[in-house]
Every structure is written in structure tokens, then in C-alpha cells.
Image 1 (cartoon, rainbow, N blue to C red):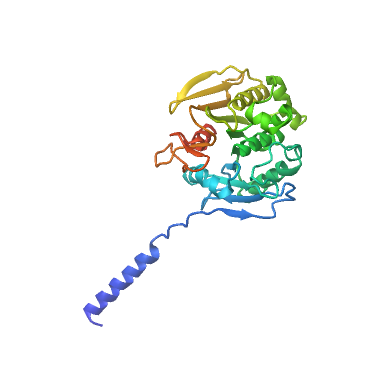
Image 2 (cartoon, rainbow, N blue to C red):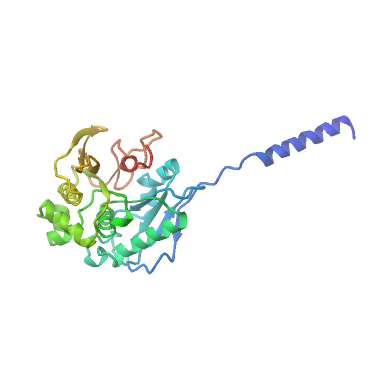
Length: 321
């Protein structure tokens, strides 16, 4: 073999070795449907997003879409799947079916779907159990927009032992439709209840439970004419009462120019936190971009207001930020 041929062969082998030793980028995770997660009495569908290589013991976020939305669109548009990659947690994305609700709303107002062990609430609890088992998940959080926000309140009340905290966006307090006599009165007018009465509705959802109760972060547009801002006021009353706190904010400041309040329990721990998004209509606050506090994609009911609700929730819960 001539020196030239040997050199050429060596060059080829070197190049081949370099290719073989070059790490292959992991394929991006994708949304996967999970079947057989339980008896599923509420006839919901379960999707999940698990970042590639996610270690065991990482948090789980359950994110519930609003009316007319679906699991995939809400997971991406809200920013939750983006944050899952950034911070390292998994996301459960339940999906409503038109046979249950023609507008694809979760049935936060139906007694048979908001009671522990029944209907959609039981299906969601089964999804949580399946996800925690499959990924050896750590603390679990629940959040949602509009009807999904109403159902997040349901899960915090009916299954408090499963959730560390909840995030409700343009949602409703637990038992609001029953207290108001109609879901529409609840949405457009609100229900006349004292803080103690609101708290009693939560306590009755899980009889004998002594805590700890999930903490709450809530977001509401001041120009929301679908779910009136009074509902966030009622959420504050409900969950401060559950936590044994008063209804006077301990911290009042602004975040991204919007009024922000925190309510602390007797031990000084923030148990309720609110963001009032001035001038925003009905939807999920997002802030598209590549900045460290940015996430989400603008779209129908996904409103670019220069604040990403998912980021603020995740930071408050200690997921990242």
C-alpha cells in the first residue's frame, strides 16, 4: 500500500470514527395519548408530554384546556410544554369529548362531575395516579383556563391530597354553579356567599380532610365579560378561608405592570396569590418570546399581554424561574 493510499484510508477511517462518536441529538418529545388509565367514569381522554430523559421524581403539572380548545393546542399555546422542556417536569393534558360537552368545556358545573369519586373529577384523579406511577412523579400541580380553571378548583377541593398547588385562569370557585343556582349566574354575576360559606363548600368536598390544602395562584382579566372578575374575588375568599387566612392582602405590588396580591397564613406562608390583568378579556395571559420569563403563543383565548401566566405559576410553585 502506498503512503498516499494509506493516508487516504486513515483520513476516511478518522472521518468515520468522528461521525460514530458524534452525539446524536435527542428527538424532541411529543404529545402522547394514554389509554387504559382507569375506569374513566367521566369519559375523558388523557394526553401527556414528557421531556426526553426526564429523571424520576420530577414534578407533574395537570393543565386543563378551556372551552373550544384541545389538549395539544392548550399545552403549546399556554407555554406549559415549553416550560416542561426548560425546567424539567411532565405535563398531563386532559381532553374533553364532544359527547360530554358540545363546546368541549369541562363540566365544572355538573354535580356528578365535581364530586369526589364521580364523573370527570374521578377520571382526572385516575390520570394523576397513572402519570405519577409511570414517571415516578414528584409533587403534582393542577391548572386550567376558564372551564378548565373551574375544573382545577374542583380537583383542589375534591382531591386536595393529590395537589401541592393550583393555578386558576379566568376560572370559578368550587361549587359556584350550585351556590348561584346556575353556571351562567356564576359566570356573569357571581354567587352571594360569605368567605366561610365558600370555604365550607371546599371542606364538604373532602369530608374529614385536615390538610394540607393546595395553595392557589389566580389570574383574571379586568375586561373579561365571559367570567366576570368577581369570580377571582370569590376564589380569594374561598381559599383564604380554607387556609385559615384573612381576606386582606399581605403584599400588594405590581408585576409586569399589573396589580399583584399575596395572602399569607398565620405562619407567613403565601397561600393565595392573584394577578389582575388590566384591560384583558377572556383568556390565558401569554408572553411569546425567548426571554427567561417569556412563554406561550398568542391565539384564540391565548392573549399576549406581556406576562406569561404559566411562567408565573411555575415560578411561584418552585418549578423554575
